[in-house]
Length: 335
Figure (cartoon, rainbow, N blue to C red):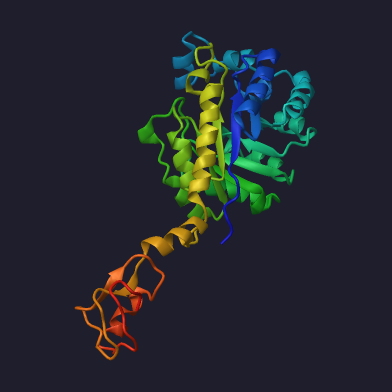
């Protein structure tokens, strides 16, 4: 079996730029330094996305700590349309790829012209039928987050996307828990294996928990993509900073994932090159434990097994018992 493909790591800048182009560029630069493969932002056009008096989510209310509507929060943290060419060019300059999540159909149409590697569907759009139908026609690689969903929801979204023309081999699913930050007891990482088994599609993980452990465990479960929020400073004002990782910690997570990939290896059970060298020295051979004369029968009293493995394997021990020696042996000589 082939070795697994390298895990794709996405630094989710999201709205952690706080509505400032300079901070967005700093996030891109820091994401590149961490070793992430992609930096991802969020694209939305408010009047196509949300009703003005929509209440903030529980985590937005907790992290923003002021009476403000979702519309007002999102308005404050929106990337301006005329920033995109600059940000994509800046990403190329810093040798990291730029992608984004559209939150409405207008934003899908807007992102189309940039020819990005992936379009990322946020968890909240998993049941947005007209949105999914538009995406299915693009024939682009799609990443679908599945927070707040059960298996039935995920299958329904896949059905809409594939019936619209999207090939399954262009689709990646991300297991996800939609709270910021997510508590360990809510992560349900075993769902990664369930989704792979039930869907026959590549499955990754969008990690909203604190620390590196969940992402590393997800890789061990076979996740092919890891997405994690990145911030320049967890103490910045904004809804997502508290559940995000600062650059130094993000870099350590990337290192941990790459080491985990090396540890996982392939599914073939075989000795490594260094083990083959060690094997000769730590396995045993059939040896004489006393002097044995020619014609004497081998027995438990005159043969045993000792290191190294330069003689006959102990696997043949029973074969030699009661056979006659064809020559004289001295103690510790290989049979």
